[in-house]
Image (cartoon, rainbow, N blue to C red; front, side, top):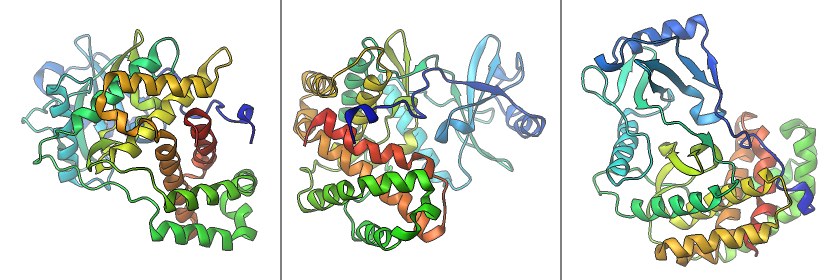
Length: 353
């Protein structure tokens, strides 16, 4: 696939967070939560709004009280309350370390998690900002904050145990690839015609990358807490400065190289895709690596392998989507399959082999 067919706008390319009015059932659902707010924000200036974002942030609701904005987050029904509390502890701790994260607020009875019939909820201050676009000086700012968060999470207190992250190049994923090959005649019905064509085109590359990286994986770092999904919609920017990092559900104990590599890929490909003038991907990747190295000696150990780390994470996500189709006939994530496949080419264009 040519460079021109890579680095296209995708569902993460929108730069302005959108908010929509809520319908009557949602308004009724929120009423019980709103009744448990602390006194300083109990009286709403207007009806709440629902986030128009895709994915993890789509269960966020914004409201205004006394000229200040707040966000209510409804946690997934699958979320374990203990895990939710760990996530909030991480955010509180990072806030105390002077990193730009939304620090959770207490409800009326002093709890950080409100558990009621409609689900589990948390309250946050609203932080102003657009989604990261990579324009102007945003890429450098994102590289600096990515390095800072990666380094800071290395010293996360032991009592805040965020659980183990992902395995890479597992036997289970190897079986998924073999099963997918065996279902080649059914790819149209499993993945849709467009994704099937893309898989046909990329399959030799996917297998070659898998086999090579499984045989010689990138040098592992010491396991630590790491945010493995710092994509553009999890980075808010105000006046070209990072105002907030979101989605600490994506914080797990893992090799930080994989988290760093995927963050670098998502941020750099956004800068190339969003540019109004042609940008050389290799130059963008080199600049990002240079900023990482200048601002964090800790990240230097991973800089030469960012491409391998990024491709490894893209392959893991591809295998996850394939397995959902094969084992459960679940097509929920098929619309991002093409994004993950193209990430392989983008990572190599940015960071080399």
